[in-house]
Length: 155
Image 1 (cartoon, one colour):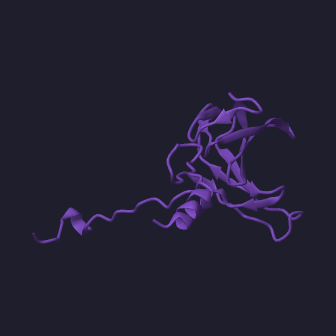
Image 2 (cartoon, one colour; image 1 turned 90 degrees about the vertical axis):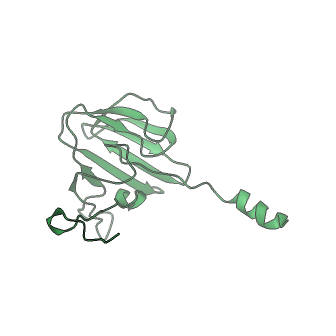
Image 3 (cartoon, rainbow, N blue to C red; image 1 turned 90 degrees about the horizontal axis):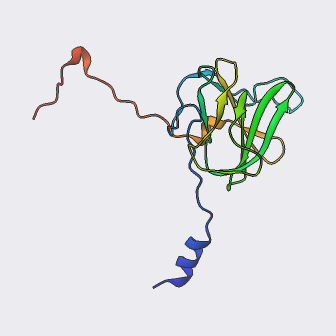
């Protein structure tokens, strides 16, 4: 038995699984506006993605973590969650059902969409290194149907 290899595996950080905050699935759907990171942090851009959702819709934690912020920024209700992999996710505009310091599970409802048609979901590493939150999700499985609905495979 290779105890050194086993020790190395046990010391590896656990991978964090992420789900879409609007559906709870591991892939995105209903992307209304994509991520558009500016060349410099002071430039205009879109530092997250907008996901389609109806006002009052349940918003879920994208992964397990600790709620690091619940409050209002520039008139918009915001929730931020710190995850074990060092990524922070943000959700706005969301009326919180959680409070700062709460531990949340992946897919747990953390609030309700406030007044807008759509959620702005952000993700960052450190203080200001924004990443595309869709990169945290899996790609959806695409299955093509045969032309004309006929299965041309032979037994």
